[in-house]
Image (cartoon, rainbow, N blue to C red; front, side):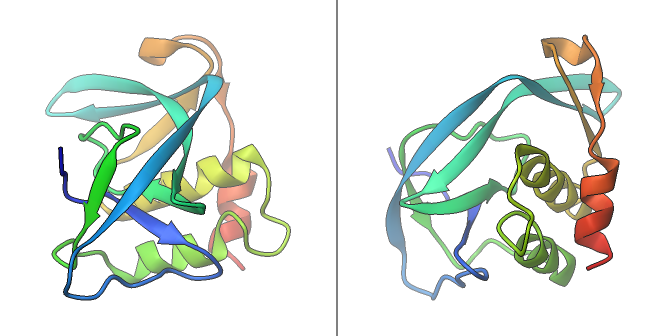
Length: 144
């Protein structure tokens, strides 16, 4: 089943997808005990956090309301982002010494934030457990 490609591919910078469509395999590496949480329309939502790979490249989820799965996605030029999303992806995970799980979490958090959704991370599902602080990782990306 084809879906609109909801993730951005990173190497050293974002790869911009041209007008033609391209299929890519997506692989997820679930992170145990890390959950993202957000509010929408007065309701609380959560999901287990995962590293996302499109082919062999690190990728990010752009639409928090869509579940990313290990399937074939169709990359399309129709997906619009803003400059802050591109900058977060460039200066985030994989840039310089930004190589930790918390750096990947911070990059994903910034991307979702710049697209209009504020998230926080916890050690248990449904917003339970301890809040995982990534403030210093976010600052490291924002102020590079």
